[in-house]
Image (cartoon, rainbow, N blue to C red; front, side):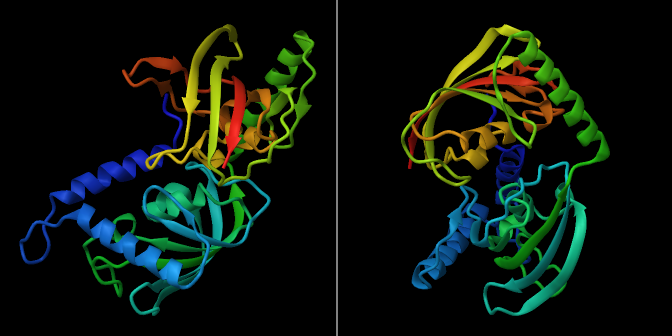
Length: 301
């Protein structure tokens, strides 16, 4: 089951493509070597500066100075962001101002950050060159430049169509719950959840690594379960609330360690307009499906 952000897979494929490219001298450019070099330099700076950073498996690092209370953007959302961009190498400013646009219109490093930081957040982003402009110079930015951005996410804006779909989905979920006589808590985001076992451990945040088990059902076909899926943190998948579809990420933060619950998730907070397929490419969850997720949170790191 594909449960990590689509953009991460796209970025990894982009790096593989860069691996065979050449530099200005006609020599083969090793993007993996370049990435490892830049990430090591970023991590060394963060460590020697005694800073606390959120790490992403891509190599991007985020120092959050203010954690917003809204939701992170999705790839199809519009964002309003204040920013200052500097070169990691010497701290010189290459751009600053305000921007408003679709998440997918920005460099890949921004796409990862904007879908990982809640609305209202302020943070410093360290972006390796492969997630920015790679081994090609861009205006005053030299080739292979690690970029640093101080950003403030002012607004995260779904489209009118997405908001309308969210409204109709929550109506369908509430009707289902009423028909089944299920007493579920209504969350302002649109998800509904019923805790069947209340744990006594710590409550997770967006970035805590988690061990959990879950199964999917589709609201319109609740007798057929997909799963179970067991997730534990690894080097390639950190298994944080932010790494799952947004509805699961929201729901996990309602559950203390040791809890069991059922989440009812509108399609836009699930897989949205994208089909979910298994590792063999078989369709398991059609696009625009409202989800029922039975979940057990066993450990919060």
